[in-house]
Length: 70
Image (cartoon, rainbow, N blue to C red; front, side, top):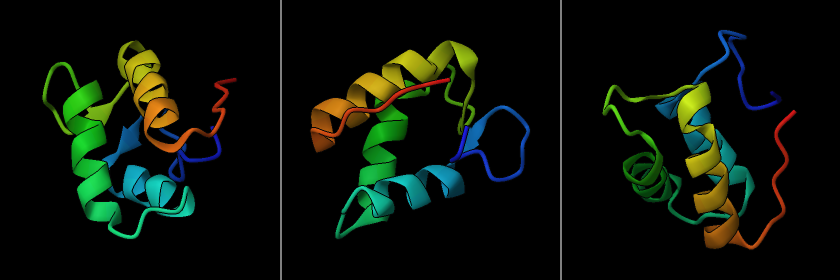
């Protein structure tokens, strides 16, 4: 995943903040918080493989950008 900067297979809040900023958010911290609330089912502050579909759906609906997961 291009957004997984540290290569651990998960997306942290900081990595997600960068993603939503790159998608054009004027307030990436706010958009990140909303995305985390929508996708982070176990509330640990990290998006893992099981939560990725919810994150992709949320970001697509929010931004209108087609997002693919490899």
